[in-house]
Amino acid sequence: MDFALTAEQCAFQEAARAFAAGRMAPFAAHWDEAKELPVATLREAAALGFAAICIAEDAGGSGLGRLDAALIFEELAAACPSTAAFLSIHNMASGMIDRFGSVALRRRFLPPLARADIFASYCLTEPGAGSDAAALATRAVRDGDHYVVTGTKAFISGAGFSDLYVAMVRTGGAGPRGISCLVIEKGTAGLTFGAQERKLGWNSQPTAQVMFDGVRVPVANRVGAEGEGFAIAMAGLDAGRVNIAACSLGGARRCLELALTYARERRQFGAAIADFQATRFTLADMATELEAARLMVHRAAALLDARDPGATLACAMAKRLATDTGFAVVDRALQIHGGYGYLKDFPVERFLRDLRVHQILEGTNEIMRVIIARKLVDG
Image (cartoon, rainbow, N blue to C red):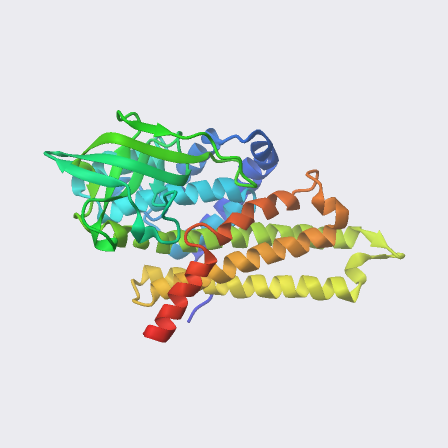
């Protein structure tokens, strides 16, 4: 059990930190206020390998592991959790193509995805199938060399912007074994998008419904075999849960740093509030809980890299703990700032709004508890 990072990991962690500080942090408040997706910045990140972190090198990716990705996303999210999370979703969707797609599919899509010439969205959730994802109703009917897809996906990051939609569709009967995975290209006839959702946070990325009305998708665009889509989606979510947990770590770490700075500078009753025991105890708890969550995230990532059979359980535990802890740390950082923390002149409120959704997406934290409890009780 070695908790030390390798020299290579330290190098790309520092590269991610420098990029986040120089190319993301100064503009994050504007992206949030203007609801602007920073495409040029995302492509700069891709030039560093951050758009295809775990994609195989023969497909243009960086060929790194899940722990490496967790280190990178923590650094990026310390500047802008919303933009970091968008990049995480792009990595997740691309990773599904890399791991389960045909040779032809990988050759066609992965190099431009790795360069961020094109972007990918992950499409599982539907208006009537959120936590009960296996009940999805979007239907794909085989018609020769194509599937004809009809249905609606909801809460899709990148909807209307992304070039590829990695969508879970029903090709068979009810339940998870009737689900397959298709790559659906923007511009295909019958593919439309709903109005942009008005959100609490994650404003630097678009979110909308994705609607399929008789969309013809080549069978060659299927990822994996028919009936494997749900398993592919869940494998993608294991990685996505580690990444979003890492984004919570980064946002919370930044807010802890801001709270420390503010507590040292803010004076009340003739002393810096950092000198008050109540403030010190709060800061100590924030740091301790954040470090505990980080260790769990890193362990889950290591188990994913090792293809350990306990990885799914570890990912659920890490996602639940890190996203709950991350939001709680940011909330206490805002409290330390007092009334100033509630103002948009200070960045803590933006982190609070961005990190709240981490407890909902990639499987709600209630579903994480279901996964954990099922393993504990049912074996």
